[in-house]
Length: 296
Image 1 (cartoon, rainbow, N blue to C red):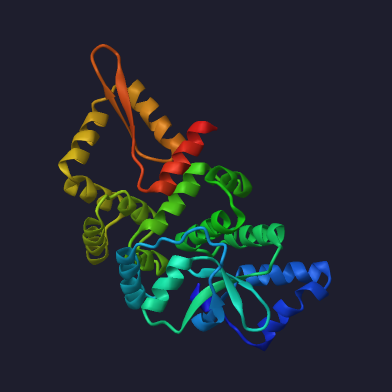
Image 2 (cartoon, rainbow, N blue to C red):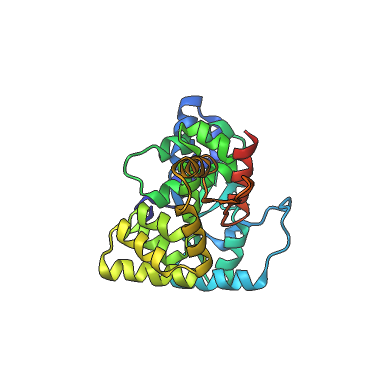
């Protein structure tokens, strides 16, 4: 995405300041341009949103993010609204904004929004996502923008895009990977198949170790999956073994449930016909997407 960065200068400021004075066709093109472009904006030009409902930020988590930004840069741009002149107001990404300040950055990458052009923005982002040359991480960032800025659920997003909900959820889960693995995906050192396998590993240190072996040994996706199965914790091995002991009918049902909710599902059956359905989730967003699927 870096090759499409847009420097804030007279041209862009003119586009923003004149947006209300141009005809609708040109306005639509301007919104599309801003939706697909990333600007480097000075932190001094950005003010936080006074209506931001979140006021509690974990200091340790902020420090960890700040350390990551120092090493890898800010991968996911923040989103700001033009306030006129050279001033901008934060719409989303306050945690990234604060951590960037802590990291000593002078400027950060940002998407620029124009006040109330919600429908045009949504269409412009979707149009950008549907381009053929985007990698999986760029697609995931586009999905997250639609969720953050257009207040879409995973289900609404999948319908807008004409995509399977599982595909949408799998892309969004990539954003939970450590920065170094996301960089590897962005630079095509690994594929989305590799990244999907790694995101299913519970511990970050295991993810990073497996990622390094994947790069150094040039493992295929199947080889990486086999390596993960051989190095996972005993509890995960036991659950996998239990799943493998299911009859073909139960295994088919388990797989159908897993595909429907977009997450790993295990079945535990007893002799009398009762049992448990165990659905794994990686974080609160993933949990909410599972609930959305169940409530449909």
